Length: 423
Image (cartoon, rainbow, N blue to C red; front, side):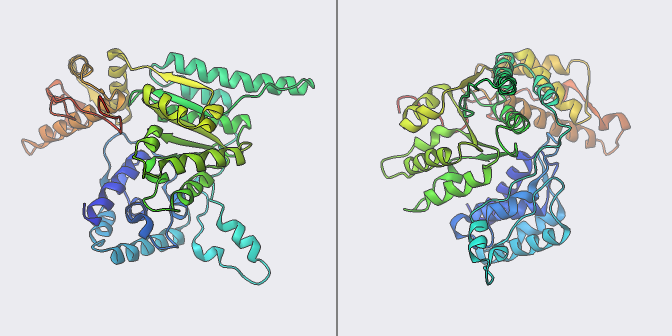
């Protein structure tokens, strides 16, 4: 794929991951660094640009590039041009200051040694900037309320409440000079795609911060691409960079089994070994949550003795029922301030009943895709006659709901890295 197209895809993915309504130059900056990978300039790292993506937004629709972002993407005609564009965007962002709630980024120039502080600069160069601690008003009760607001997941919520209860009991015992019974803060989330694993992990990270299990309570998301390199000696460095950015909070690795999904020449094993060592070195201020399909996650945990001894708590995420998925669709519409006309939810439930039998059904991910396609149909209908009634701007009708699978054309589809049968 051409560099410019990779940058465009990465920018949209970054905006969508943070629920931002529009692709902005800051997303393009992140995308350039991601797309260029090992070829990125030394002063352009993910740690430098990550703070500018905060805070998360509220949008559920697919973000569309702004004019400025599109111009920046169009300018990335070569690695050299992309680097120049990234530095220009970074300069603009730095002059405006970090996004609200973000830690101040640090460029390579900030770590240049000066007489008498060389050792201090070297130490700072190995430490990733961390987001600030959650606001003190974000109490444990408020976080549990946020957890309870999620659709379904009754068994998951009960397990999270157990984790909180253990820490509260330990705090009480400590106040009475009784020994604490501590357990591992690392978790394994198992379940199919779109069952809320990432959403729950974000809440757990903030809960850990509020409970004092970690210093900050932020969450860093990583995948195989963030941890495994293609050349000898680079994988360990990538893992170290990502883990350091998560110290003080939670490192969330989705589809973690993909780390062990390569051949004998793959560097996934090196990534796992480095991760285990850094988990041990930072055990007092780092929690790791790994997630993925049930069977594959069991295989992943058994692949390394260090993983087996550190991941002792498993939380299974069940698939949503049709009623729960329809409720999620309704919530997405409410967030987008779209009114659902009579018959819409009935049509949605019918689509969900039909699609849920497809292999690797995407659960809430599928619902998001269905909503986005329905919104696109709504837009086409609104502008079809060149006249716009005020009510049309906010009303989705039964006819807007797709009659076929919006993500796979009615054909079975797979999500993620799950191995094919018989592999």
